[in-house]
Every structure is written in C-alpha cells, then in structure tokens.
Image 1 (cartoon, rainbow, N blue to C red):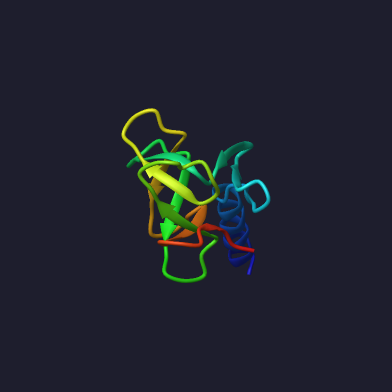
Image 2: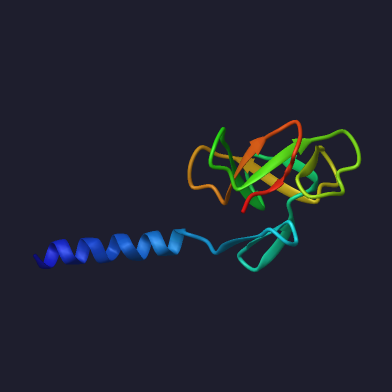
Amino acid sequence: MKRLLFFFTCVTITISTIASDVKIDKNNCTITKDGKTYNLYGKVKIVDSFEDIKVKIVDAFEDADIKIVDAFEDSCGKVKIVEHFEDVKVKIVDSFEDIKIKIVDAFEGVKE
C-alpha cells in the first residue's frame, strides 16, 4: 500500500511539474505561457525546437480559429508564416499542446 501511495505521489508531482501555466485571453487575443505573453496574430515561424508555444492543429474543439494570410496579419486570428523576423516561434505537436487551433478561411479569432 505504501509503495502504491508513493508511486501516485511521484506521478502527481511529475505531471504538475511538466504542466506549464498557460492562459488564453480572448479580449486581448493573447496567450500567456510561463509569464510571457504572445499575440495570437502576426508573424509566425514554425520550428522543431526552442519554441515559444506548442500548437496542436485540430478539426473541432479548438481554442482559436486561425486564418493564414499573406499580408495584413494585424488582427486577431490572422497569421503570416515567415522564416525570419517572427513575432513568435511555434512547434506543431500531436500532444501536450499549449493551444489547439483550427485553420479556417473566414471568421478567425479566439473561441469562448
């Protein structure tokens, strides 16, 4: 019994250590992770490591709808993919994401 209790305590501590503090602010169209705030619009660079935010692309139950644009990425949910001079670095993941997004053609923005 003591071993089982010790095991569950270790698992709980590990999970709480791994989980980061992520908050999505719908009014300001931002995401705050580990005390740093990033806009959910602007220039985005997709990377394999050293990311600012981990993103999972989904078809339903998303946190934000994102429209990929070539210009005028200055409003909520509009993103331009760039290689240099990015506002935020994003890693596309299948699990342990900070935010779930859906790629759309219209009606972009943060969900309630």
